[in-house]
Figure (cartoon, rainbow, N blue to C red):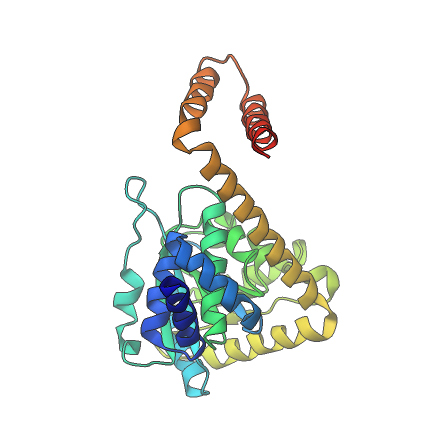
Length: 328
């Protein structure tokens, strides 16, 4: 009973925007423990109104600096803004670097700014599962917008686009031939294309090349239904272009609402979240101590070329289904 009261009290404090309560709960949520899951049940009906902004692009492209300037602009307008920084996981510990917290220390004392670094966890579903759970807490706590930023690696670009309502694709001049090295499909995920570090002379050429490339492919994920992804130049050094970027985000948010695309994207996010949760729960069941030897045996069989990964997966899932029926 005391545990139930503490969960309800923690959730109530989060709904009041208590920063310490938010931080405590997020640790529970990321650990996926009983308290975190129970609190999410309480908070979930109070979420769903915040606008989520994904920020992705190649490493070293100035994403964190850009996000820092977005915080400045949104705070000047009176918004409460949260940032989820997805850091690369250590392959040994799963720990996240804290670079973003260091870079954004100027907001440490502002209760209307919340910055959380997260590790990209064990397997594919971890990113979606943990990010959406954290987003739910911050949304219920009254933060709007919520920025989801990839840090250090570009491997989660598409995953971030599947979790955000508006995706910013950040490109930077002076990093080789950016257009030639732009991953196939990367341009299509951007609802807004941002040329960062626009104080550099090569930025004009990069912006032109990106606009030309848009004419050869779909200009953003929304192209088929009427949204033309703008290419916006920004300079954090000169603090230029950030106001235009914020206006473009607002325009895209309004377009989502008026076009009916908002419902489509929210459904996509919910489907991504559910699929990630199913993947997580299945892996947890398969890796339980009583079944871990079977998983290890399947790995050995795959290495010996005695069974395909597809067949091994089918057998493991069949084992789970058989156990459920037997225990029903």
